[in-house]
Image (cartoon, rainbow, N blue to C red):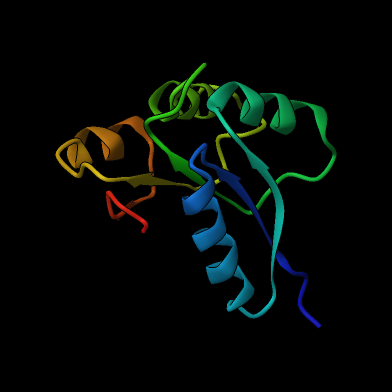
Length: 114
């Protein structure tokens, strides 16, 4: 049996969290390791836990530390830079910049989850 793919979600919107958790539940062999509400919490989790995720899904627009700042920190940390980061955003205008910064993909979120 294959090792489950471990996912970290960095998203402060509870409705988007719920949608994402539902989507992960549909993926065979995937496990959500944690949900953090901002980039600072995500970095604390990444730097203080033995199990690193196989992939990170991260929103851009968050309080405390936004997704761009967190992505830059991840890319500049040798122990973390191998983890692919997929950016979640309602705005795709920054797509080229995000790829240059180190994002592996961009998923456009809907602006309204209701």
